[in-house]
Every structure is written in C-alpha cells, then in structure tokens.
Amino acid sequence: MLITLLISLILLSRGKADFTLEIYRELLCALRQKGYQFLTFEQYCQLKASLPKKFVILRHDVDLKARNSLQTAQVEHELGVQASYYFRVVPQSNQPEIIRAIAALGHEIGYHYEDMAVADGNVEKAIAHFKEQLAYFRQYYPVRTICMHGAPTSKWDGRDLWKYCDYRELGIIGEPYFDVDFSKVFYLTDTGRCWDGYKVSVRDKIPMYQDQWTDQGLVYHCTKDILLAVGESTLPPCIMMTTHPQRWTDKPIEWTRELILQTIKNWVKRLFFVK
Image (cartoon, rainbow, N blue to C red):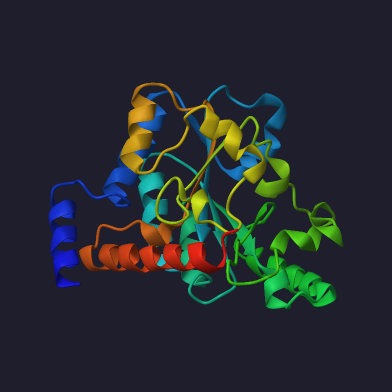
C-alpha cells in the first residue's frame, strides 16, 4: 500500500496520473478547441431536430462520493460548460446540499434510478418507489431526464420497469439507453476506471453497437488516448461521455484508494458477473 501511494504521489506531482481534475479540465478544453459543443442530456432531447454537427452530451452518474461531483461541476462552470448529473437515492449520492449547489451552477439534475433492485423485482412497488423519488428530486430541479443505475450485484435490470409503464407519462423526455441512437452517437464511459471498461461492465455498455465502433478502431483505454484522438481529429463528431465523479480527484490518498478498489471490483466482475 505504501509503495502504491508513493507511486501515486510521483504520478500526481508530475501531472502523469489519469482521472484527476487536471486532466479532466484538459479534456474539456481540448474538445472545445476542436469545435465540440457541450450539451446536457435534456438539451440533446430538446434539440434532436437541430443538433450541432459536433457535440458531446456530458453526463455524470453520481454513484458515490457526491462531493467529488461538486468539484467536477465547478470545473465545468469555470469553463462555461453545462452537464447532466444523475443522483441515486442512497446517502452516498443523495446529499441535498450538493444537489442544490450543482443545480445552482446551472447543471441539469436527473434521477439515477434502480427501483427494480430496491423493490426486489416487485413491479408495483418499483413503480411507486420511482414516482416517489422522482417527486423528491424535482424539489431541486424540474427533472425531465432519467438514467438507469447498473446495479451490477443485482439480478434486476432497472430498465425492465418500462415494460410495465411509460416514463413519458410522468413528464420524462429522455432515458439514454432508450432515447439515444448509439449507431450515430459514440458512447464513452469511464466504467471500470478506464475508457474501455465495457469489457468488465455488467450493464453500462451498448452491446448492439460496440462491435461497430471497435471495428473502426475507436477504443481508448486512458484519457491520454482520447486527448490524442481529439488532437488528430479522429474522434467521432457526436458523443455521449459518461463519467463517475467518484473516480476523479487530485487528492493522492483518495486517488490511490479508488484505483485499488476499482481494480478489485473489475476482477470480481470478470469472475462472477460479466458474461
């Protein structure tokens, strides 16, 4: 552990470490310099008939460590960028003062739902729970988009809820896994603490179109790989980029802990959950 921490300190001090706020800022600036416009998911849903030629739907899934989300939100605000932040109901994510602060910076707030897992597959209870939590989050923002939480340890897929009801009847205009054409919008996610984490992801992936993109060589492991692609103008023009802010920090101990824990999680998912 001590050796790992020392290595982390060296990497962070030399600006070589991935998943820091410094490299996140660099990524946003590089994309903007190449002409990408940043959209919240709500804006994407509203602009579908007149989208810009180059855009990034900037989405954050707040699974844990809500305070880290405020830090990424502040970086974005400083750069004049708006993003979508999806909060779970668990206390590690659902922290009212953080939600209010992020909304006050001009970002979109959405519900990161996992109601089928919470209700252990009971559809009636899951629907009631979803409605209750949607009303709760609408205290902070007029929530119009939602996003499924993968819940890798649960046997229930949250998206199955929509086999029994229609979220549009609840004033929801978009859910990424249903309302984005991923044959045209390239999906980037830091699941697994890397950008090719679909290999160890249970649900945060787009299997129908993954081969289409990998066949074109559009596979990136680290943020530097993406920066290189941006610089060479080989990154697709239409992107949804999903991050989990718990992974992004400049604090050496927190950065190292996240690296170690995520490495262990990836091993476990490969062994027991990924088919």
